[in-house]
Amino acid sequence: MFVRYSVIYLFLHLIDKVSLQDPVEIKSVVGGSVILPCLYQEGVLNQDKRNVFWRYNNSKNVFDIEKGNPSTKEQHAIFNGRVESFPSEYAKGNFSLKLSKLELNDEGQFLCDILDVKKEHKLMLRVRVSTTVSTTVSTTVSTTVSTPSSSMRAQAEGIVTFLLAVFILHCLCVIC
Image 1 (cartoon, rainbow, N blue to C red):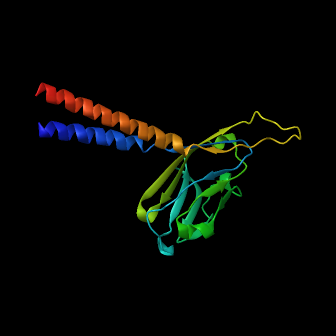
Image 2 (image 1 turned 180 degrees about the horizontal axis):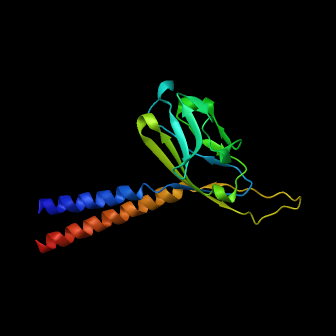
Image 3 (image 1 turned 60 degrees about the vertical axis):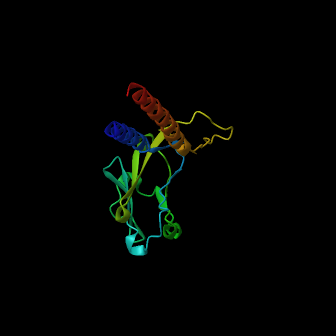
């Protein structure tokens, strides 16, 4: 009977962990700018361990930070002149980027890989054409980061998982 409970717990635990891996979704509009967040808050990294690599759709080089120094020497041409980092924030574990002059083909997955501590942050950028135009012929730019949606979904799924586990345990106890 203990084995049944262990297997059920392990299965439910794995399901709950997988739901936490959803990438953060960020939305913006063509021509706008967006901050792509990447934070490491589990400790302080010395300068030699600040090796961070940003990739787009797992292939194109967006930006590199090598031993705490920003580098664009291998940056893909589509990101040339559109990426800004914040070197004064590196010591605090903030490796976020600002991507400007957004285009529809920027939509996709961005990956921030903090190499030395084996941490990855996945972001899904959604770019749309703005439908709001102001009277001075400039396009309104709106940027939203929907980080709560994935954590709220994970929290809700965790509650459902817990309730399901209690129900299954109850049913097993009744049967036994």
